Image 1 (spheres, one colour):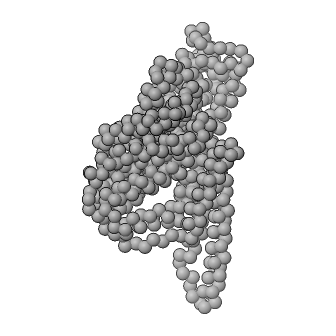
Image 2 (cartoon, one colour):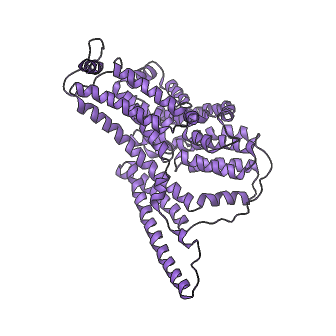
Image 3 (cartoon, one colour):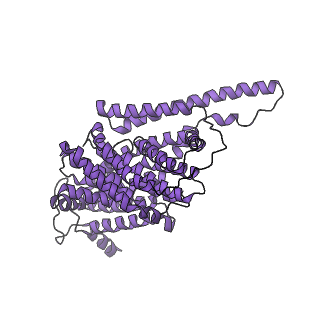
Length: 476
């Protein structure tokens, strides 16, 4: 037994075989050529492979990522503890955890508001309105695309993608050709719209949270992002069916408080931006203030409907009539909307961010940064990283680059934000909206169908970069 413990301990103890390690007070060891580093790479690959195989093995993508991050950080912390530096590793873990918590709170509030709007019937009303207007499929193609582009500037891309995908499916019922091409357009539009707004794009939010660029500076990407959306959309337009879907027989039924929730969400976004720009508070602070407003509004709706129901019940009882069914459904439970948040995605981001943070702490990201930004021009490096987002989530890649700490001018940070944001549109698995639609849409939209349009999406990618260099030359 003692022999086994010695073997395990030897894996984590320093050795003359492994070069580049330092010692002393608060030592930060280079583990890139140590067994701990190799284990980190191994479990990172295994976790990502399992996450990308979610549809095949039917294992939610968050589970391997969270487990992988736990194993990697425990290995690192055990090594540091055996060398008397447990506090150093613990502080590194806490630093990465803080970055994730800020992201978690921001997205949590955004998704909660979106769920509240869905529960109040706002989006269902939008679907019915579009059908009753008797728009043609080509008109619906552009309407859903532009709505996705605009909404993704203030709401998380995954939520907007799922919402507009549901709209496209509803208006294109029994028309799989329209559903497929509309979903490709929605994915491109969502990623493009969220790229120039920290309120909608994860990678853009990371840059904003780290105070590398100010909120208004991202608007310099508005035209390049619009070009990224329009170039493939114009080409796809000619392949959209020309006929018109049948009108809906349902009436729009918005539940009590729906318009006021929209107003509160707008107020929340204003508070978030104002608090960050003028008070230098993290964006999560403004979003949590908005959640508090929604909580109190939930209390108001619940209490007022109880009073109405008790008055109705007394009147019906007085006249000897049964209370009609349906009145009790007008209350509003905020915690149901919080519970319906896409927790699998949020936990996936936890695992991804903690794994990237671990690889940075081990020393691998410094080596990658030296290769990408030391031996290549920053423009080439940023374009390559953007293309990589077709396979790996853009938020994960941006977090990795931020941990590399490259010395870039504002124009290059904008270029990186652009390429990472829109590069995920190249493949269906490259962004959260694409992955979400793959799981939601049962026919019409598939990985292979999306890949057919990759050449025109790539054309939009190249055009957006060209426009960025043209109109934002002053930032370089």
